[in-house]
View 1: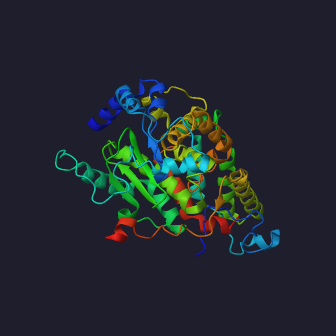
View 2 (view 1 turned 120 degrees about the vertical axis):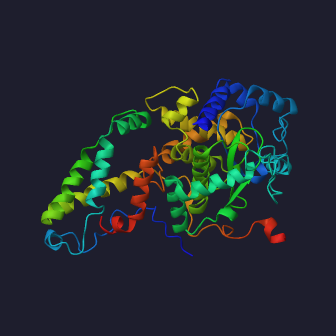
Length: 300
Length: 130
C-alpha cells in the first residue's frame, strides 16, 4: 500500500505540469531504434534542464537529405535516455535500498512478473509458438535510464530494456514488461521497420498502449485525465504519439498523422490476446482461449 | 523454419472438421465438438453481463456491450451436449466464424514474417566479443 501511495503521489506531481514541458523535453535515441514508454510527463525542472542542454540530435538545420540526416542522427551517441546502452556489460549497482540494490529489485520484480502475470504469460506463450522463445537473461536487461522512461525495446539486438531506477513497484513492472513484450511480439511476427517507417512504429505503439493496461480507467484517473465515453481511445492515441516523439526526431504533427493513419487497423489488432485485456480476468480468459486454439480452429 | 502463428486465423472457408457441412454428416458428431467448452461460453456471457464490463466497454467503445450472442452460443453448446443437435452445431460454427471475420476485417499495416528474426536467439554483441 505504501508503494502504491508513493506511486500515486509521484504520478500526481508529474501530471500537473502541462504538455508544453513535455514537447521541450523529447528524448531521442535513433541509433538504437528504441521504442520508449513514458510513464508521465517530466517535471518542469527536468524539462528546463534538458532544454538548457539543447536538443542534441534534433538540430533545426538539415543535412543534404533524409538519408544523410538519419545517418547524422545515428552518429549521435548521446543515449540520453538509455545511457548504459550499447556498452551494457554489468549493470550498475545502485544505492542499497533496504536489502537490495535497484538492479536486484528489478530482477526480482521481473522474475515475479514473468512467472505470475497472466498478460505476460500469454505473450510469452505466443512468442514461443511463433519461434521467439524468450530467455530472461538474453532478452531482458535492467539498467538505469535518464528522464521518465520506464523501458524500451531494442530491436537491433532484440532485447527489452527495463529502467530499474524508474520502475516503482510490481504492478508498474508488469505493465512495462507487457508493453515491451507487445513490441517484441510484433518484431517476432512481422517485418516491422522500426527505424524508417513511422507508421510501423506508430502501429506497435498503438497496440502496446491499447493492450498493456496502460490506458485503463484507473490509470488515467491517477494521471488526472478524466473522461469516460471512448476515453480509452484518446489515451491510446496520446500515449502512442508521446512514445513516438520520445524516440524519433519528428514533429508532433507527423507523429499524430502516422497514428491517425494506422489507428483503426492497429487499435483493432488485439493479437495475441484476441480482445482488449482490461484486467487480469480478461487476460486469463484470453490465455485460456490461446491454449484452446487448436480445438477452436478445428471446429469452426 | 516456418512460423505457424496460431494468431493468424485460418481462412473462413476452412472446412469444418468431419464433413462437408451436410446436416446428416454432422448430426452424429463425426468428431466435431463445440469450438469452446460450454463452461467458456458461460464464463464469457457472465463476464459480458457484469457491471464492470459494461463500464469498461463504454470507456473503450462509447456504447453498451452486446451480450446476447454469448447467451445464444451457450444455449447452442448445451443443446449440442444434450441432443447432438445439427442446428446447434451450425449456429455455433456460424457465430464463431462471424467473430473471426470481425477480427480479420481490418488490414495489416506490416507484412507478416514467415520465420522469426534471424538474430533473436543469437548472443548479444558484447557477449560474442567476450
